[in-house]
Length: 142
Ligand SMILES: [Zn+2]
Image 1: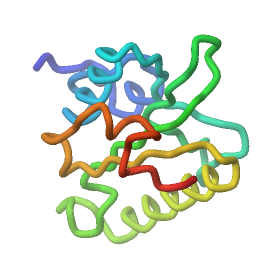
Image 2 (image 1 turned 45 degrees about the vertical axis):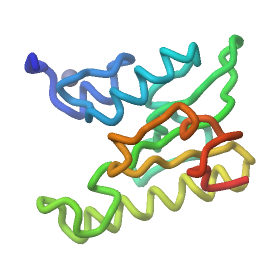
Image 3 (image 1 turned 180 degrees about the horizontal axis):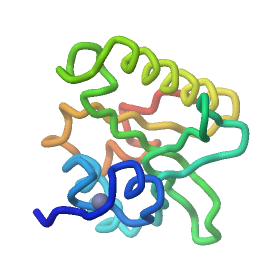
């Protein structure tokens, strides 16, 4: 895989395409599946009133209609979202991650925006059904 010249932070925050060097294979796979099923989406979607401590929180994917309006959002939860699943993660980092995840969940609950959370261990069993609220077992609200 070609190395990306940007820092992770810069690439992920600013790049509107999924970078194969900085993005996980699971995220790339979700993107390919949405493409194959002609679902339009944006990545790194921020929304008004959804803030982290220093910057807006962002959803990995926002599936949109042809007018660009958001239909639902998808999070791919990598190792860092599960305590003890990422060796290099400190307890403080995990707790911040968990706090942000809960904040996103609450935001979607409150606004009625369907949120799908795909855990990383499903990477190899991923199907399009899992990515669409009407057929997914991984919708966390509504
Ligand atoms: Zn990159």
